[in-house]
Amino acid sequence: MLSRLVFLAGSLKSSGPIGAGLVQASRSLQTSSQSLAPVPPLPEYGGKVRHGLIPEEFFQLLYPKTGVTGPYMLGTGLLVYLLSKEIYIINHETIAAITIGTIIVYGVKKFGPSVAAFADKLNEDKMAKAQEAKDVAMSSLTQAIENEKKEQWRVEGRAMLFDAKRNNVAMLLETNYRERLHMVTNEVKRRLDYQIALQHLNRRMQQEHMINWVEKNVIGSITPQQEKESIAKCIADLKVLAKTTQAKAAA
Amino acid sequence: MAGRRAALKAIDWLAFAERVPPNQRGMFNALKTRTDAISAKLASLPETPAAIDWSYYRSAVAKAGMVDEFEKKFKALQIPEPVDTQTSNINAQEAEANKSAVAYIEASKARVATYEQELEKFKNMIPFDQMTIDDLNEAFPETKLDKVKYPYWPHKPIANL
Image (cartoon, rainbow over all chains, first blue to last red; front, side, top):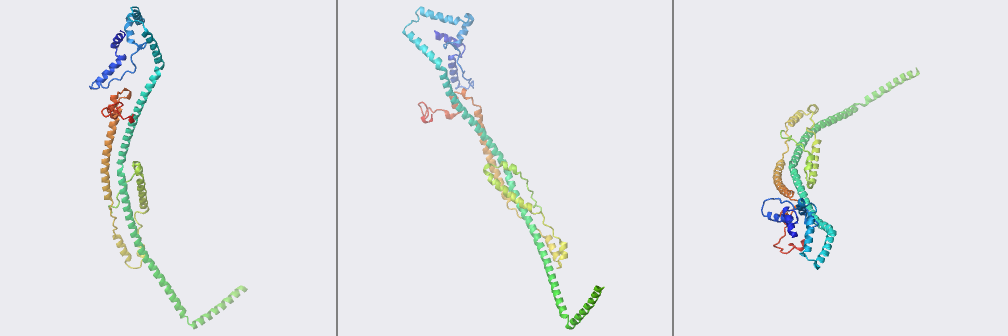
């Protein structure tokens, strides 16, 4: 009976614990067809329940007619009815149910959150790994695209290499040409200078030879008689000079 | 003398250096040093040689007509320009390089297209926390479990867990 009430509540708004199942069902139905893509994500939390059992919608349903205490009165009345009319009989199973129920509720309340956190953490780790792999893949792809673009840009500069080579060739040719010009000029100059030097040498040799020849002849032409005369004249001159000097010195 | 002064194209060595990939830097440096040496040699030679002072020589050299003969022959002398054998080679190289460059750019563009396609796929993926296992298998086909080859759980070799 309780489950019937739950079903009634669940049919009104499809976000109870049954609601999640409905959404799942609709998802698996929709993957075959192509309508309604993308599928809306699963809700993160199930529908709200009170006392862990009764959905909130039940209380909302009864609120306009019976106020806040309505569902509780209904519950108490039902319970008393079942017990008094012995529709529900208290026996050993009741005690077992009560104790086991208490222990279960205590256990869940105490350890529930930590177990949930642990399970969530496992899931989180898986997702983080997947996300990281995706990020790495994306960044490496962008990097690869960058590199390719850079390489393309580099290739564009290939003309410069050939310009440099052609420049080199032109410079070498120019250098060679200039060297040839200079060589020609220098050679011509050298030959002319050689002629001039030759002339100078010739002239000098002629002069020296002439001088030597003239000297030799002059010396040879001085006869001994001329020599005696010239010596006598020199002595006479010297005597006169000596006299004048003496006179000067005395005066 | 018309073809002598082939215009030297100004080369921006800085821009050139930027475009050289790192694995060819040695070759670039060698080229640069060679070019610098050649241009230094060129700069050291004056463009025209010093003019010969014919009047001085005419007055100085006694032999009649020698200077005149020299002068005449000198002025009539045409120094042949050095023959350019390499430019055609360089042009051929350039044409080849252009062809291979075009091919490389084509291949590079194809690669870029594939990369961009994959990037788009990654960008348009739904976030992982909204995926089901089916969505994951669609996005990354390598995660699909081969239930035919390994029919029993965990549907992949134990070593790959």
